Structure formats: C-alpha cells, structure tokens
Length: 249
Image (cartoon, rainbow, N blue to C red; front, side, top):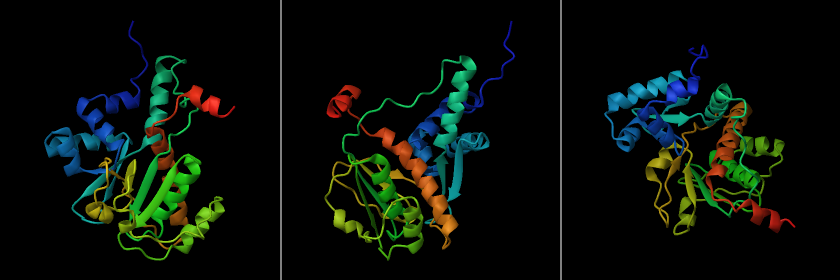
C-alpha cells in the first residue's frame, strides 16, 4: 500500500544532483551565477534553471550586486534549510529530529570582516562574532576606504549589550601578512579588491546591502549578521567534549 504522505519540500527541491551541488557551494559563501557555473561545471542556462527552482522553494534568495549591476548574488537561507530538514526527518520518523551539536569549545579561530568603509557592516560583524563566539574567538574588521563609524551602528549594538564606542575604522592594509582562519567580505565592492592572506583561506562573501541611514535598516542588518555568524561558528574546529568538560573542572 502506497503512503499518502507527500515528499517533504526540502527533498523535492534539493534532491537533484545539480541543485545539491549549488546548495553546498552556497552554504559556504554568497556567489554570483558566473561563479556557480564555474564551480559546478555546468552550462549557465542550466545553473540558472536550477537556481530558479531553489528560489521557488524558498531555499535561496537573490540580490543585485552593488559593484556590478550585471551580476546577481545568491544567498542560501540556512535557517529555512534547517527548518525544512527538521520537518523532513520528522516526517519519516518522530525520532529523526535535528539536534544541536554537543557542547564543545572553539579552538581559537581568527576571523576578519571586510567592507568598504568599515563604518557599519564589518564593525557590527566583528562585535557580534566576538560576542557570540565567546572568549576563544578573535574578531577583526577593516575597510578599503575607512570612514567614521556610523552612530546608528553604535546605537543598535548598544541596545543589544555591545559597546562600539571605543572601536575605530581601520584600513585593510593594517592586516597585511596576518593569518586568519576566515576572511569574510560583506560588500560586493570590497570583494572585487580583497587581497590574498597567508594560508590562502577560502574566501567567504556575504552580499549585504549598505544599510540606509535609518535605525530600522541597522536593526535588520544586526539580525542578519547574528544569524549568519551563528551558523558560521559551527564551521570552525572544536575541541572534543571530554576536553571541554575537563577544562571546566
């Protein structure tokens, strides 16, 4: 007897091999169509077709590049993927629920956040990464053309218990030759001019629009950064649970 239960939406959307490849690439970084075409080694029209399917399923979103209007950046909605995966597991069996990873300590990752002005996006990302990652992480930020820190960025993070008053805008040249576990570009312009860093960490790009000069735009930016950074922290190596528990005794 056939089951009357429909196939979970995530499995329908992600089950195609090309779409799965696209999702795995977008899980690491926002990417333009031309970049995805090269990474998955498929014709651009086929890549665009499958991206359309993923957009229709709500798994990815698109935003026109602020550096080159001919480019469109695609972003994976990890929160929606998580929700749909949980639903898919539960649909098969109630015991198959996604569980958060076991408690473990980060091994001291260093992350550098870059945008053009180092006045809002990258400053907020630096502060939120340090806050969410705890004392083990090392967060830095810089810009290609630094300018004074936005008072809206200061106000929004102050309301969330984070103090930006002592922060200063920095040029990315200050970090030349330093090693980072992850370098994250937050605007499309600085992505095009991001220098190489020792160790050649795989570049990660988050295509975030520059917030308009209103508090609500900075609130939305803080929310998106909080979500992205929360997922990012799970990609760094962690100490075994036994080591973490021993350190706490």
